[in-house]
Length: 255
Image (cartoon, rainbow, N blue to C red; front, side):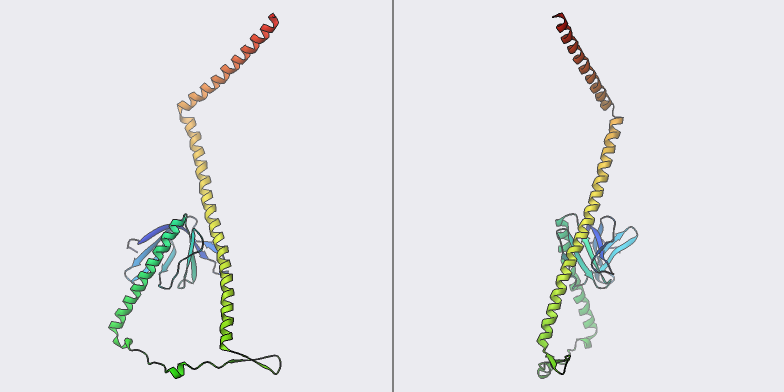
């Protein structure tokens, strides 16, 4: 895309494991730039991130997308077109907040762009704007008959529609609990990956700083002079101690 990015941020990019749907897979070894773009040719908004020559993220923002903060520095959203879930690990809570706010703005802009495109289609095809016939209230008010399930014997169990709804709600509640547990586990993995990367960078910087100090010591004449003076100081201190010991010993002999 030739357009300038609307907003950019640096983050560690993750994708959900397509097999387990529970674990995060790092999509980048280091933090990369994640940007929002407007694609004027298709009148859509995209989230794009490139690592080297590979597109890590190329996601069209839709009005029904939701960016969820799952920890202080981690957020995620689902892309139904790519059949995946993206996760972003930021270095600070402020960066996560900025990205989340911009995500909301872009999502609203995508909704307006879709409505505008739909209005153009409706104006070009007036026949599409004809409303569908209303269903009579007598038909719509009809309820589905109760479901019949044969038991182990001759008896039959009848289950009402409300019981089905209750069972479905219970299943959804259990599914949500399991999902929240998976999200917590995935967040810990992502946070650990980010901390390991930061720790590796700090260790490398420390080694580099120590190497620079040693190199400076070798090249700096002042340091060599100070080192020599320190050695002379140690030598003079030793001579002084020996002289004091000699005089003390000599005094004892004279006495």
